[in-house]
Image 1 (cartoon, rainbow, N blue to C red):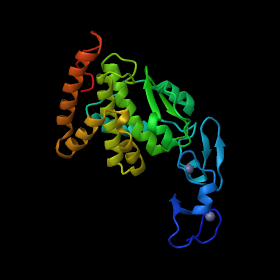
Image 2 (cartoon, rainbow, N blue to C red; image 1 turned 90 degrees about the vertical axis):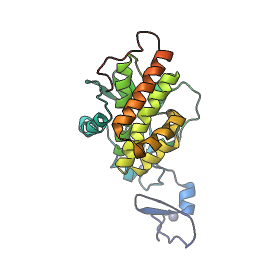
Image 3 (cartoon, helix red, strand yellow; image 1 turned 120 degrees about the vertical axis):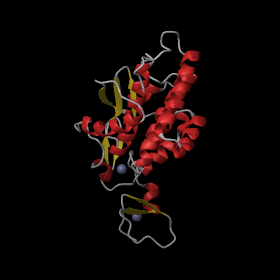
Image 4 (cartoon, rainbow, N blue to C red; image 1 turned 60 degrees about the vertical axis):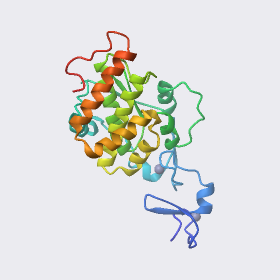
Length: 256
Ligand SMILES: [Zn+2]
Ligand SMILES: [Zn+2]
């Protein structure tokens, strides 16, 4: 096996880095600067302002600033419809840098993230707020797709309950967020997006932790209509308890 960077043979038994069908030896991997998207120590890393270094492999597979998003969103609508979710029309997408996106979601004093993985531990790469979907510039398509599912679902429930977004801390918000998160996870599983599935699995604290596992088990035995009914009943009960009166009753058509 030949190292992609230094071209020397990687000795048998030595650990190496493997991604994008290329292998990098341990000495190279230890010191090389790495791609912010995928952590690969690329050969032609380029700095992207507001984000970080990008490798030659990711450069070709991220959504660049001029890629139209509608054709990517269109095919996920039938999946959402299968779970009774019809997103509000006219959502606007805005591409922003990572610091701004992070600040829109949390004011917590977090360590600066080095890689996209780190960012995903604390924040979503897409975030719906008041009819706008803010998204991190230049993310891989699969990541966009699963998180578009999460946020279109979030936009639907926010609208149904008269809320700007689902980012607040009440049990209602957390439960609704957990369901949206689970819908993205389930989609990643069905689409064989293994990296994204693992990312969504590893950080369910963004959603509702216990519930998330429950839904995962339910999905194995229950058809979507049963799960939707279960979720809706719980969500409505939580809304009555935790949302201010007037915001607690969704219109009859919402989220069904
Ligand atoms: Zn090497
Ligand atoms: Zn990369």
